[in-house]
Length: 392
Image (cartoon, rainbow, N blue to C red; front, side, top):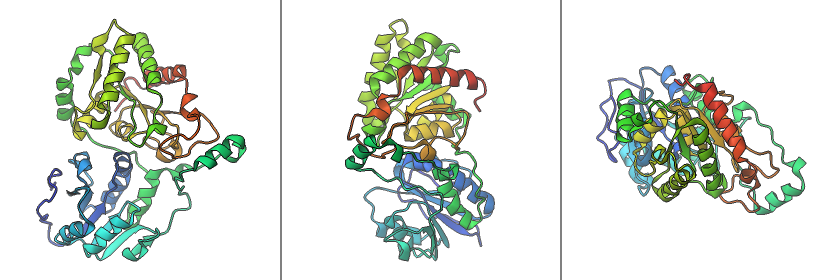
């Protein structure tokens, strides 16, 4: 019984008599949302008869359409107050809240909803809002933003920067550990977002995917909403795309959010200019798709070349191999799929100051500038050859 995910204030859900009513307070960013899907699936396995509702920002509502772990989806807008959200949730009669974000606000919403059992990670300023504060996992790694002074100091002492993290440090385990409080198995499954055949066919027809005559279709995402420290230089994306197009006769779909339309269109123009023999083989989809259409478009691609972004996680979750470039962030913590997934290739340079987790580089951007075009081209060619015909 799926409630409409597009309503900002849906009607109260009619639950089956006696059903356990679980609210999951979802996270606020696309990539993080994808990384919660293993926890949701494990929660459903452990609670097959429970009525499970997800509370999510309205911008992410479409992601959850038809998700097998959920019975209903409730949404909220950015400016809606915790008091307003709490009042709406109170009408639903939830008995348990699993609070995935670490913020005080998310716990406050559930406390104001008078949900009697409230489970979330122990954090400053919110422990009194929870009935079951969960201790921090031993494997958890804080994504500490280094100061400019720290970054410069590490450039002089590279031996002090080497960090080694266990696979359990990945953020999928962060959410699985919370789901285990309600019986979910802690063993990971791959993040997954389902795309129906109908959705894929509609997007393929809209963007004329059938005209490529069996040639490879690659996706490219040169943006990153978080900030420029996560973006490989655009001219290098262009150079890699042109080289791959000439070598593999591939088509390119250029992705980007509404705020990245200009970046995507400029990238598409420059790729066309670099290979004038096939201008029709490059198309920008930036700002032209809904979130569900983006899922379908990524599913249609044979491979996606991308920065560390939400669409990177989404591409992996719909089953598309990913070649991802990491600079200021850490693939051990937020890489696509599960750690060690051989379908994906994660490229980074072992510079002393990375990961710094900053939005902008305070020095010379060496983490990204040292990733060579020829290495990216080689990774895409090898990944495509290895996974071609094997994509689920």
